[in-house]
Length: 347
Ligand SMILES: [Zn+2]
Ligand SMILES: [Zn+2]
Image: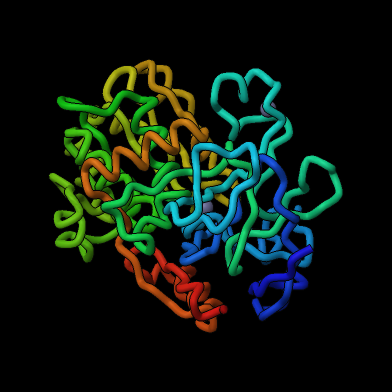
């Protein structure tokens, strides 16, 4: 099997370092991709450090992968060498369950995630995008619109679809008031996408430090959550709150900002579960919901939407050697707004 250069870790307490991994030989339905860039998602930190307790090693993280096709299997007709493509959080699924049939592979009972997951054979560990090449079944390859630059498009494969999917599911559009809670990698994409869908976008952030940035990204309003008046002023105001914050918050206070029948959608998992008061839900028929990335069909729809509206991520491009430093900066929210690895530095 072809060996390729990668960066990963042998255990939860070890920093990321160079290693070699095997990629499978091209099968009839496979697409071989020469990786150009890979975005750095907070999940990469959780997984490499075994913060969710399910990590398997060695682990090469990375699920915001973009690059060019180098070869295709004999049954692949939709892609050819030279095409600009992407791979997100999924590389396979069972294809038989209700969720797969509905195009919602992210909820499949037997998903194959891009890393820290087994191939369908149940024993080969798959490895992610901090590497020079990847081989993926054609059904899980996405097309990147030509007008988007590959480096800035990489974060669309996770941060983009993670915010696009709930915005669409909860029918964001003209006349809708949407709050984006937290302005990081996910939040900045939610602002751009929600703005392009012509909703009124309000950023709720701890302080007003990021007010200029939020407006530049497309926010109509910005409010500080460290100011109690924000909660009075915006009581019963929003149709939808996209909650990108994965630290413990008083969810009840935020639910009170929703109109009747409004929804707050969680995209992050707080390490300790907050208490959920029932009355803000009951008193205005509000909902608390969650959302996980998106299916393959919807991911392509999101990429095409971004191509049409010329939307991509705001990034800081780094060489692979800066990855451990980048992790520390992400933990301090010190990134505008997504690190992307230049995979040329790994070749
Ligand atoms: Zn991610
Ligand atoms: Zn399935």
